[in-house]
Length: 450
Image (cartoon, rainbow, N blue to C red; front, top):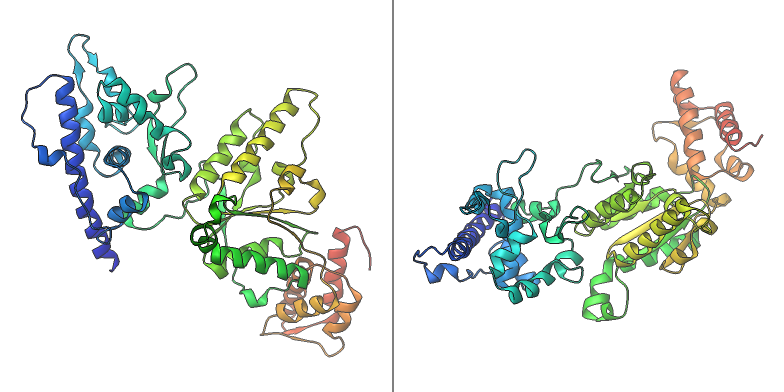
């Protein structure tokens, strides 16, 4: 089915769902205000859909949604696709000459329509039936698949106000999926402080130590066969979801590149977490920032890459003041959130002993990225030069690889420098002196000399 037909069939499914929602909402409001209006009982029955007919129908079937759950999803979705349908919730309590408290709802800063809250949802499902209200309330608890799969949730209510007075919100990714049929890649922003990273290189160009490569292959195998392991073999009942691993080693040894190429090979986006945008000096803000990332990523089937992970996942300190106590709370929050996250999380650090032991116990793999040996360095040198250049006859790559112990990142910096010098000199031949000068510059960064 092409994109146009897919969107058309999805719109048709949603039209019937919206008509059903409108009938149910109108019935509930008529009951509330004791209006004796005829109801078409057939309209109150949830429509049936072929799960193969549209994305929305398949979504309903996938989760085995009850009619009540379908109504809540529609209630959260309507402000994005047909907001005028909720105008009927703008009812006035004639005795008080004000809005009706039972219907809940808020108005946005720019949106002129009715934005539903938890109260709106429970009114729609339960009316004035207190027992039913208590039963349906579980839909907003953490154990329900709405929360576990980050489909929809209640925002945090202000301190001292009832939790159900908070807005009912549906994840942006779910809105995209249920309307357009795909997931929009989020842009770096305050709401999603992570950046999509990519590389023009291919997997075959990656040079790793044999032990490192072996552990990376284990991760690839898990990513390929996760569903078989967890669902068909039913080990999901015993194993924690997701795969968490630590990449550690000196700068320039390929940690970020490996994470990026993993995503490219397995067709998963890789998002690099911008720690400067996540960590906050204000109490509770770091957790909120991280929750936005984890919550969005749960629906994206992507890889989360935490570079310089020591800043977030470092060892907890002894509590000597309030700052230490809140810093430790952040680590405890991360432990819980990482354990619950069903996807792939990669942490990168220069030293593995900087990471809190509680995280170390939860990693499926701890992968060392050492400085490459002579053969690996030679391969890096050979792979990295432009095919449009050549090296001068007075030097050879093997001798340079033997003599100078450099990381892959440092080798690339040398090649950039020597290639620029050749271009500036009007030649395509890489000179030995330029390579040595480039190496000297890299060693000076580390406080070393030739």
